Image (cartoon, rainbow, N blue to C red):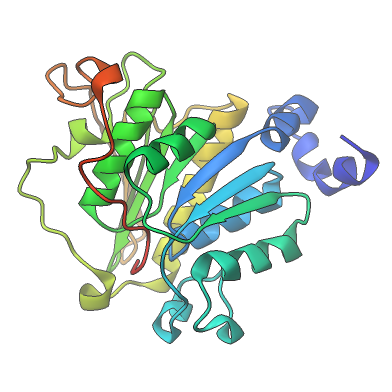
Length: 266
């Protein structure tokens, strides 16, 4: 680290649990963020501010007026611009030392797998089950930790799935792809603006902990927030030995069966 970096990140370095080694681990890290919307905004802002060396943002959508109520990485003058370009502009103003790569497309198949393989950690900031399952399969196959968040109305949840840990469940263990799960969209159901900020900030915190190897991450736990009562609830989740994703031969997994639609609504 140079003198400017030592000063910029001094409040992290002062923490014994982080120190210079922890900060350096973030400077050397590569994070893949699926979605540049309600959840992806605080995730990207905090990871960039904290000094994560490279962020790759995936989102095919453009900034819309309705996004600005909660997608805090975008500004009014960015309406009509691709979200990934708007986000990169904001992030460069916060920390020019963080490299921001953008992917303005619905990544899937080999493209998704290549992005996951190149990352040290993946953050799922999308709003649909097809995306989540595709990203989960790629993370299990390539052994990349996944930080998953979700938010609708006043309810949010966050969890960490780490295939490097033999006891860690994957997203499919918790929400089987064949399960009868109802998808809810912010465009229809609405969402409390600070909710996605809270959940996204927790996702960023968990990602930083995993990258630096500090604290106790949310691996094997689902953390749920009721923002109306401002109450948190933590539920233990276990790996399903019969899981079709993490319970078998990982080398045969593929992300090609579902396209990845990034965070266009949450």
